[in-house]
Amino acid sequence: MKRRTAREKALQTLFQIDVSNIDPKEAITHALDEQESDPFFEELVFGVLEQKDKLDDMISQHLVNWKLDRIANVDRAILRLSVYEMVYQEDIPVSVSMNEAIELAKLFGDDKAPKFVNGVLSNIKNDLKQQ
Image (cartoon, rainbow, N blue to C red; front, side):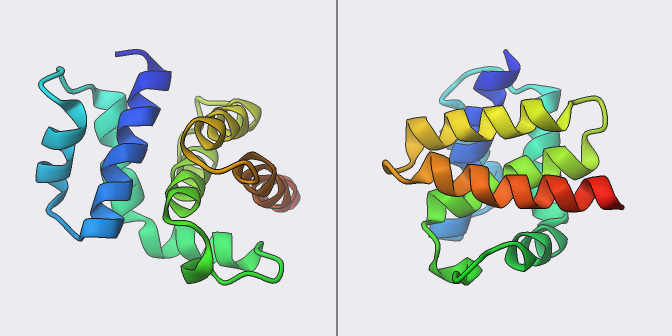
């Protein structure tokens, strides 16, 4: 599975878990739709779920005039996925994670999602540089 496909499937899985509150394994089965799983895909899904509170705190600190629970479910899932990559996937350049998130926002979000996602991630990127 290509990494872009893994990200798309991970996003779909995380979105389902967030919206429907279903078991992660059930969401994975549904998102994969009989495709083979992939280690990168599983790392993203389970990594985001494991670090969700930390990711949410980090995202919340960089939202301007927004609260995490008020942003679109898909945007929240994209941000969690991308921030997880930016912080925990050291082999992936931050710029790649950001670009992939923007592409996911274009594909799955509304017209304003790419700009919103880019703005939040840019703030997080700047914060990570200072650490």
